[in-house]
Image 1: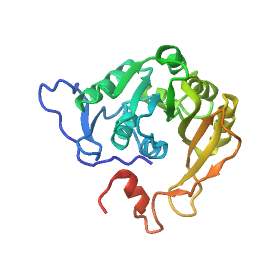
Image 2: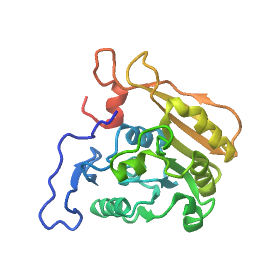
Image 3: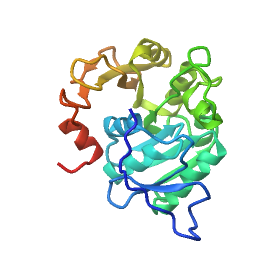
Image 4: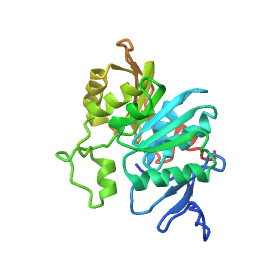
Length: 261
């Protein structure tokens, strides 16, 4: 379900202070925003774009992104919430460095900070109960459920590699203020696992939206947010259908991707 925000990749200029060998600069269709990515390694996909839209940070909120990767979520959300502040947490040093360079390339150092650390240590480093919103695009598979990726970066991005869903939820809960939200995207097949982990961390699932590739198709992804110490009432939103019966992108898909009508 990967869909690049633009098919036009900008070639880095010689001597660029931000681009390293093997990297490229991709436009994000949010004004002049750009992101650094490395073809052949982990690049963001549809799930990140949908989560940025679903999470919808409010003005002035303090937001943490656990497992920020290339920094795609803070970059996208910074455009829709121009007064929010973001902290991206990434355990892989090279990915964290690339994300930090993307932030500098866009002149957003005053609003987005990238931290190279384990998300389980984020609250101790960044502050307990200091955030209004935590977002996370968690690893999608466990080593016992899927084949290991041949590339280490993809393996780290797609497998829990010793990090459980319960630890992801606990890391978010430790960062959140009472009443704060944690928004995630996850495979629909493992929704129950995710909801159990969140409730175990006192994060009550409150808003749920399934993502379908086409009308009538079984959901592949779910978008879910949970409120710290919230009440037990789940609100189902209208399914998000990406393409119509004719295979064309739906109006909402085009809105989320900022595609021309």
